[in-house]
Image (cartoon, rainbow, N blue to C red; front, side, top):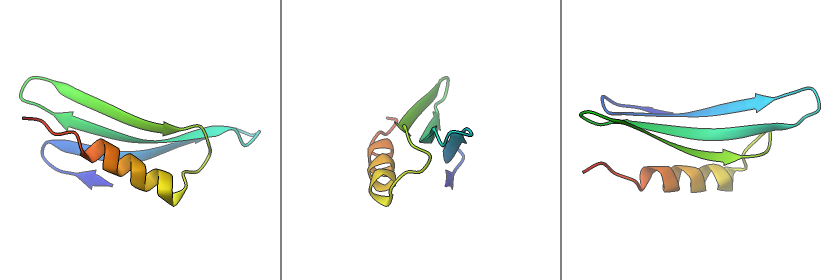
Length: 65
C-alpha cells in the first residue's frame, strides 16, 4: 500500500478451509532508535471498503515527532 524511507503499510489476509479468517492493515514506522507497529484487524476474510477506509484513517493519524 505505502512505502517510504520511514514507513511501511500493507494489507494481510489469512483464511482457512471453513471460510474463517482475518484481514488486517499493518503500519510500521521506523524511528531513529525504535520501530512502531500498529495493526487494524477485522475478523473476516475480506474488509469492506468502509472498514479499509477507517483503518487507513486511524493508522495514518498517528505521527512520529
